[in-house]
Image 1 (tube, rainbow, N blue to C red):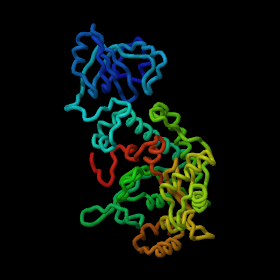
Image 2 (spheres, rainbow, N blue to C red):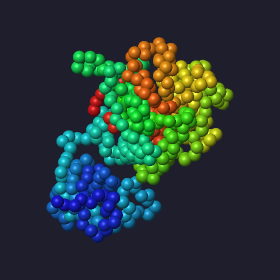
Image 3 (spheres, rainbow, N blue to C red):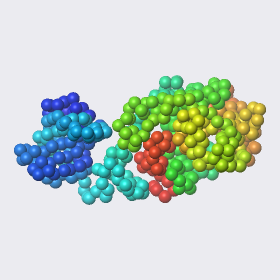
Image 4 (tube, rainbow, N blue to C red):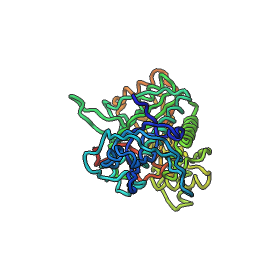
Amino acid sequence: MTERTLIRETVGKVGELVHLSGWISIRRDHGKLVFFELRDRTGRVQLVVTPEKGDVIEAAKGIRPEYAVTVTGLVKERPAKKGSEPVPMSPDGVEIEVTALAVVGKPSEDLPIDVSQSDMHLQLETLLNHRTLALRQEKVAAIFRIYSEMLRAYDEAMRAEGFLEIKTPKILGASTEGGANFFRIKYFDRDAYLAQSPQFYKQAAMSAYERVFEVGSVFRAEPSYTTRHVTEYTGLDAEMGFIENVEEVMAMLEKTMHRMFRHIGEHCQAELMLFGATVPADVPIPRIPLADAFAILKEKYGKEIPDGEDIDSEGERLIGEYAKEQYGSDFVFLTQYPTAVRAFYSLPNAENPKISESYDLVFRGLEIASGAQRIHDPELLIRVIRERGLDPDTFKDYIEIFKYGAPPHGGWGLGSERIVQKLLGLASIKEAILYPRDVKRLTP
């Protein structure tokens, strides 16, 4: 079996014969010379077919963009043009003089979109309609390389702090949140629901393992057409036990976010360059009580939000600007939300039960995480459930978690795609999802 060389490895093999595999991105004919740009999972490199190689010239005749090929060739030095910038993900100063070329896969029809362009300037719906092909475009591919490294960093950060990875069920017998934004499905002879979060299960696992985390699908039946909502996304969840207060949870989340972005900055410079993006500064994240945030919005920006209501998207954007201006931080924790606007399992403040021990994390003007210290006293939990007009019997499995000595605990749910959206300045969250689902889209 021929040993394959990856494109990123060619820079160290000048003068050697190598065997490459990949897709043709660009074809250029200059007189008797044919130039191709070849890409694989590690980068791009220029191929040169010379007239002396008649059999290769013949093989190259019909090759067009997105043909999958195998190549044998000599690695040669290719001095950069004077004043030119190095191409991201392209090995500097080398090209391949082709000695053998074979097609191993080719398009069966004309390409509906041109993925060789650095910016395709197409409507999002067009890109999503042809998603499988669009994923090959350089900037689109960079999104998911960054996304992959983000997931890797989250995993490493959690494990470094002693969190155990879990996987919770996504087909449930009842809606976990007690709300209306759930998907009902037919489950043999009865109804079932798609999980809105792993909340109850991660709390149950916490009561056994103390610290747990999950990377998993979340389903929300929200009839929303905004740039920040979809009906299915990947949540980065965590729950930690034996805490003294909600600040411990926020401190852990802050540490995790800084670690994730340091990792992305170290491993994704070429991809970030394509978007002109930079990772946030590693500075302390400010904490602003929601009531204070409302006062800031009113006094500084003339925006008034009625008492007892949640902050809206414009308010998040403005308070994000304020945090950047006042603290030099791309993040801000909004804390002390009214109990009435949070999930029933959020712990009320001991001195003022109308305020909950909860928070949101805003990144560059967009909420990316929600969290809280949870109620761990079953009697208090039953009372709160009743006060919300809900039936405790509906939540008997959940309440049972706290009958066997559950410790004080808290956690968070992060929206992974929102992180990437704001990091790269993407217009829509759908761009950060491989195959997004929304109110209208179920394919491809």
